[in-house]
Image 1 (cartoon, helix red, strand yellow):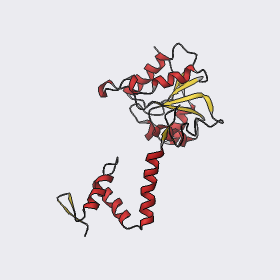
Image 2 (cartoon, rainbow, N blue to C red):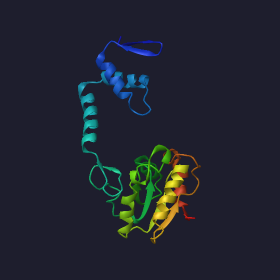
Image 3 (tube, helix red, strand yellow):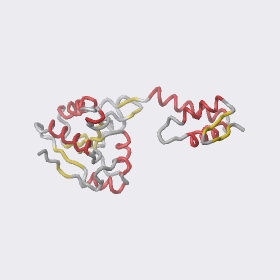
Image 4 (cartoon, one colour):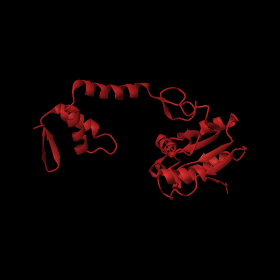
Length: 211
């Protein structure tokens, strides 16, 4: 038997298994028991399976790129969305993270481009404007191709602060600023909104007024 459980503490007869479980348990949402199931699954596979699994992770980590324009994850210096000539380069959807891009793309309702901030302004957590990719967004706007910026940031206090800050910086431009419609509840995370609600929120976006 590879392990025993006593008072919720796993004891392993194999140090290799223990180290593998500890590694898997560092992943978000993966507890020790789930990590153990994953490790035992890999133990039960042949060498070609585990080699391909480990190889895919290693290749991904070594070769992954960050898009020079929107900061999306990519296989090349410019991601497939930014380089797609069939998308509207005049409309840019500003989001917090890569996960938000994936969520919006799942809706099939948006055919513009994106800009990933890398988070939101949060004084409590010590995150200021300089910690985000706001300066690069301004550079993209100054290039003159962008006509509309859709602020698709999670409707939280920090999200609203971020929208207000960026909108103030855009006041001197002719760029139209809009926000997603409030089908997404205040305080919610954008990535967890269902596809229909999120899609409708993008389509029914409304102008943003800086007071």
